[in-house]
Length: 212
Image (cartoon, rainbow, N blue to C red; front, side, top):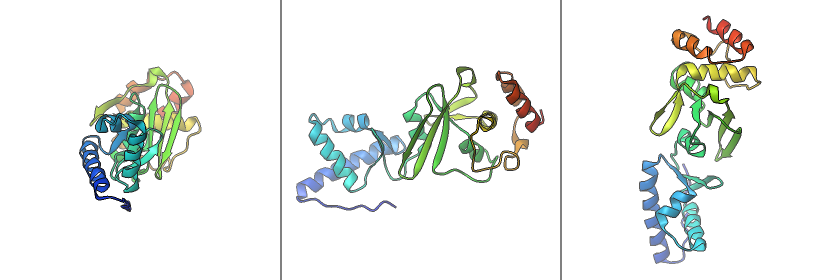
């Protein structure tokens, strides 16, 4: 729980912050707790930059919102995949988040999301959470669909992402050889997806491990 502290000199100042807080809560409900600086600027319609900064700081003071990283704020119960998507609109959430959601692994990475995108690898850390955007080649940007405004990989693509980046040195909180239930995957889809990969070493590795 966030600890809310109220320190205002006047009743009118407190009322103004409470009005802003209610507006924030309504917007955050629609946006799953994720707010950009431009969202706040549109919401407040504050013409003076100094006054805008004061209003944001007042909301931070009582922890209605908290700064995640530059230009991005969240409410207490924000959705990490939604924040990931807004940070990189053309990315898709994959890896352990999907494996856990599809019950392919037993542990769920609650405070970490790894997504893939065409573009530079980036890592964002804030409030005890981590969002990693790894680079994929354009021909490997497939196997995902939107749900509630977030692009999620399907189970088969998420497994291939995990294996592909394992060969490139990425390590996970689960063991790829013993912790993933490969029996739940659609082998026909996996075989079709593997034809898109141009790395023979990876194709051979994945084919053997997945028993295709």
